[in-house]
Length: 294
View 1 (cartoon, helix red, strand yellow):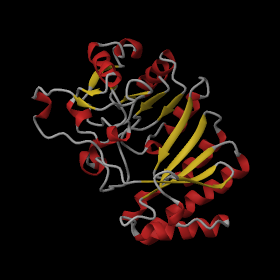
View 2: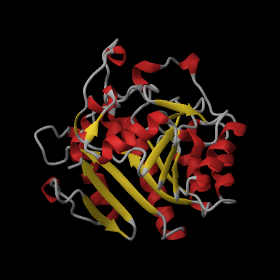
View 3: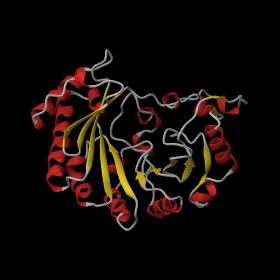
View 4: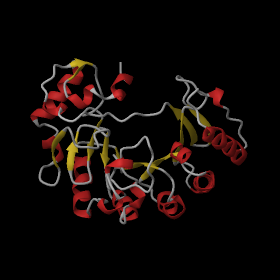
């Protein structure tokens, strides 16, 4: 098991149309993983031999009141953090990331800014650029990905042009939409700073009542339970980082060790199915991401 996703909060300060956070919770129902539960998560990650942790399934991790404290806790372990963030709080959270040796990579979801007003989007982008420049000077070994969707396609947004122009101006590059294609998704800007383009992502959805239906397996496979597993903010362990609703609940790390949960009958059945190129769970059958794996 290489990667464990730990959803330290399902709260987010944006309401992006492509993300379930936009409809799942109102501001009064924010949930934050308590410290005791987080300790069990990082202990469990080490027990299953994980190398990397991510602080999200849903939610913006830096909104957690104990975010810097949780990053600091990783320093006492061999685990490395890959942070996925919308970057809106990077002006205040960035220094903790740069100063922590536990942080290996920071991914900025800059495609989220396409749905903001241009002034707000430009302000957030400038803060991200400032962080990148500071990191290049102070932590040149830190990997940074600036993520963008649909660059150079008919689904490209006006924001993509604005974003690329600002990046080129800031770093003296000449990146154009034509540089990206399905086989060339990353462009090195400088050092370990990259611009990464991909297609718009769709979360798997299940219609009401589908889980109660008995369905035959369909052809397909996935890396879930092979290279990754996810833990939701309340301790529920699910098969992958796309199961934000806990449809494939394998157990709860609050009451069970992670290695034991990963050997549960359901986990073993799903793993066996992936090995045989069978998608056995309705959520897996509805997941568009599975189609990326041959």
